[in-house]
Length: 502
Ligand SMILES: Cc1cc2nc3c(=O)[nH]c(=O)nc-3n(C[C@H](O)[C@H](O)[C@H](O)COP(=O)(O)OP(=O)(O)OC[C@H]3O[C@@H](n4cnc5c(N)ncnc54)[C@H](O)[C@@H]3O)c2cc1C
Image (cartoon, rainbow, N blue to C red; front, top):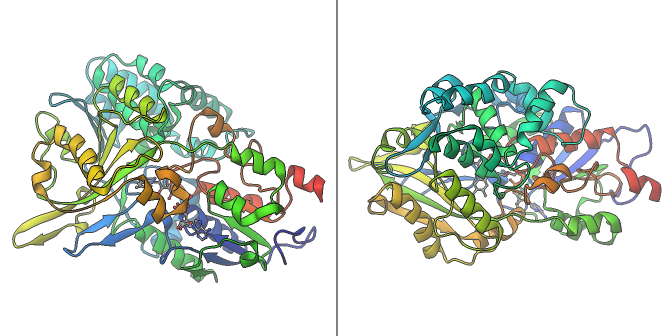
C-alpha cells in the first residue's frame, strides 16, 4: 500500500513498516513496531547500521566512537526499561568510570560529578554541597519517573504531577539563573557545563533543561559507555530486530517515496528537511511551512586521537580529570555562557566550550599496548558556530588548544588523529546538517514544538511519521523519539489537519 495515499483502513492493524535510517531512534522505532507484530524493514544510507552509534578500530587497534560515547540518558529511558533485558542478552553492556564528569575551571579548580549525589555534594565547597543535594537528591530518587515524564513531548497530561511540576519549574529556568543557587564557582561551573550539552545560550529560558535531565539521570545510573564501543548498542538493537523478524538493508539512501511505497507505516529517522524532500508535494503545506521554520543549532568540531599514556591533566584538577569519562573545558560558568552565546550568534569564541571523552577509563578494552606503550582513544569536540568552515588541521588545532590549556604537552602524546569540521560531521550523516548533532536547536520554542506543536511525529501524510532527534524529546541517545513515534504510528495513521484533508 502506498504510504502517501490514505493508509490502512480503519480497524486493520498495520502489517508492514519501513524505517528510513538506522540511528538509535530508527532502530528503537523498528523494535517497538516489530514487537507489536509488524514486519519491519530498516533502510539505511550508510554502509552500516547505527547512525550516531558508529565505532571503528584504527590501524593501531585502538577503538574509537565516531559520534556518541557516553549514555547518561540510555539506562533511565523507558525504552531500555522495556527492551534492556533482551538487549543485554544480545551483547549490550554498559560500564562507568570512577567519575562521570569533571569540569575544569583553571589549573587550580575543578568540580566532579559522581554517580552518587552525596559524593558529588561532599566535593563542593561550603554550603553548595547541601544545595546540590537538596536540588538533585529527591529528583534522582525518582529518576525513572522524571525520564518517563520528560523523555516525551513536553505538552502532555502528566502522570505524576508533583514530579512534573517540581522538575519542570527548575528546567524552565535560564541556566544562568539556576546557578545562582550556588555560591562557589565550582558548583556553578559544574551545572553550567552539563547544561551546555544543549548548545543553547545559557541565559535563555529553559536552558537548564538539559542540565537538569543529564544530572538527574547521571545520579541514577551514571554516565556510562558501551563496553566494546557504541556500535555494540546498534548491533544489539539490530540482532534483536532480526530475532523479531525484521530486516536491515544498508547502502540505500532513500530519496523518493516510491522506495517506501509498499509499507503500511513509514518511519523517517531523518531531518525534517530530508523528510520534506522524500515526501515532495505530498507534504501538506502547513507542515512544510512549520518544518521550514525549524531552526538548526550550533555545530561541533570533532577530533579522535590516539594518545600515548592518556591526557596529561595538570595542576590540581589532574586528580579528578584523570578519572572522569567526560571532562568539560571552558572555564567558569560565566566564561562558558559567553562562549555559548557567541556560537549561537555565529561567532567562533576564543575558547569554545569543549568536551573531552576518555572512554577507556570505563572500558579498558578500547586501548592497546604496543611496544610497551599504552595507547588510548581520546575523543573531543568543541562547540562552534553552525557551518564553521575550518579544515581538518584547523579543527585539530582548535580542539587540542583547549585541551592543552588544561593539559600542557597533550599534543606531544598524540600518535595519530582524525579531525572532522562541521562539513565532515554533516557529510557522514545527513541528519547532522551544518555540523549540528542535536537534530536542531533546543531552545524553548523547539523544546515545546519539536518540530511541531501537538503533532511532533506526524508528517500530515497518512501512515508516515518522523522519528529522529528532530522530534520530541530531542537529541542524545535515549531512543525515545523512535519509541514515542512508533507508539503514535501504532495508534493510527491519520493526524490532525491531514485527517480533515482526506
Ligand atoms: C560527534 C558526535 C558526538 C555525540 N556524542 C553524544 C554522546 O556522547 N551522547 C549522546 O547521548 N549523544 C551524542 N551524540 C548525539 C547522538 O549521536 C544523536 O542524538 C543520536 O544519534 C540521534 O539519533 P537518531 O536516530 O535521531 O539519528 P542518527 O543517529 O543521526 O541516525 C540517522 C540515520 O539515518 C540515516 N539516514 C538519514 N537520512 C537517510 C535517508 N534519506 N535514507 C537512508 N538513511 C538515511 C543516516 O545515515 C543515519 O544512519 C553525538 C553525536 C555526534 C555526531
